[in-house]
Length: 136
Picture: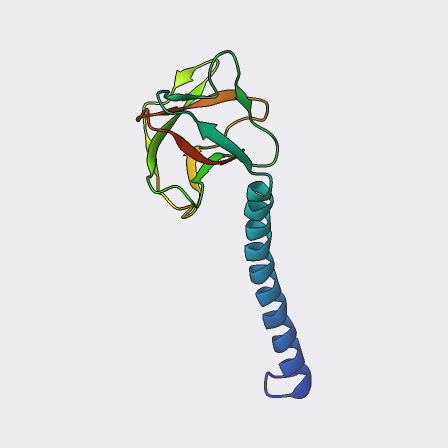
C-alpha cells in the first residue's frame, strides 16, 4: 500500500479533503439558499395609525411553503421599530413579543415551525402607523 508521502497517497488525501470541504461548503450554501428563497417571497404590509392588528377585520394572512417560520422586517424608511406578536386563527395570540428594529435592519422570526396554510395576523403593541415586510 502507498504511504502518505508517496504520490498516490497524497492524491487520496487531497481528494478526501476536497470532498469534505465541498460537503461543508455545500451545506452552508444550501441553508443560505433556503433562507434567501424564503425572503425573496416577501410581501409588503401596512398598519394604519390607530390600529393594532394587521390585517384587520375578517382578513387573515396565510402561510406558504416558502418558509418554515413567519418572519418580519421593517421597511427601510421606518424610523421606529415595533413590538409584534402573532395571532393564529385557531389558537389565539402568542404570549411573547418580538422587537422589530427600524430601518429594515434584518429579518426577525416572530413564529417558528408554522404549518403551511395556517391563518394568522400580527398584533402590534403600539397604535402608531407602521410599514414592513412579511415572509412566510
